[in-house]
Picture 1: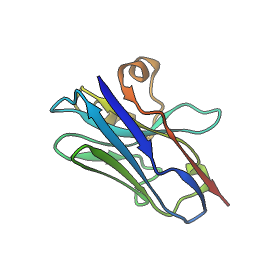
Picture 2: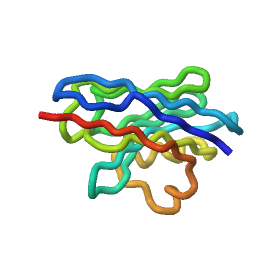
Picture 3: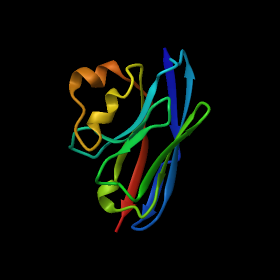
Picture 4: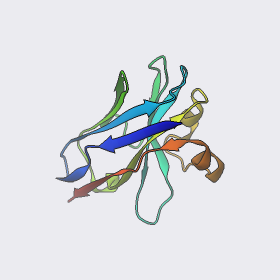
Length: 130
């Protein structure tokens, strides 16, 4: 069982920056894949960025050049720069024991079976005002 706790969300104006953190604990597999997803009101949860145990990563085209994913020991980060109102939503940290499976869902809605298969944090709200 993996526990995930996010922090760092908040309210900023367009062009602002935030850094999200996710502390991971518990039974962490050697080839665990970590990812950030987000969900705007009335929309499906979609992938934002993912990174695997070898530090290979992928980022959604919608945030490429503005967001960066990284990890350090047991903490996952999402650096978000030049934020836009369309980045508003609840941001979730996720862990998957299947290597790179979340990679294919960056910029795409996550299907219900995978939603149930991943471990999730409680989410942190990001609000960007114009």
